[in-house]
Image (cartoon, rainbow, N blue to C red; front, side, top):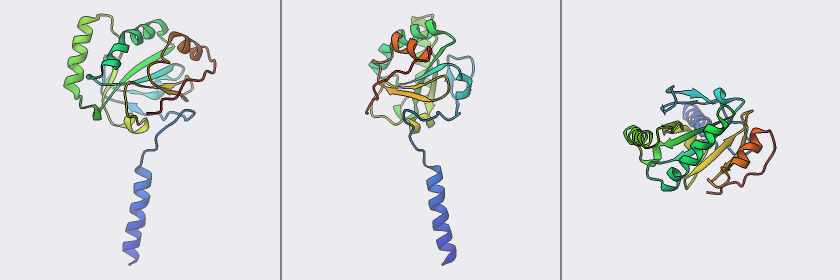
Length: 178
């Protein structure tokens, strides 16, 4: 009886510790290692590597027209803010895209727009649990100190908002509800 109770109790503790709690605005971003990166020069990077920069995680899929439509503007913003901002596209495993689809997409994109510099994580499973969503595009804004300052759709991704955050100003980004 004691062994059955101990196993059941231990199983509950294990289940509780392995559950991922979604993050929200105001939370500190954990120092995760992002793997499976394309168009970056490295296959993996730690979140702490972006300390001192605004990190914008842009969740997307190869079949998402609105996601892809935003890429030229986001690429332009990345180039403008260079060392102060890092856009990181995030393609999650649950989109149905695999490594080949993402690689083929990038091959076509890099051919069509030779200056395209946005990197992407592909086949992600960790960020998708930390930032659950119903729709994409979906943006997570992580400030210079690693605090999540926004979870938005694409509308707030503007020159004015990025300038304000890079300058250290506090702004209210509308929180995406889905």
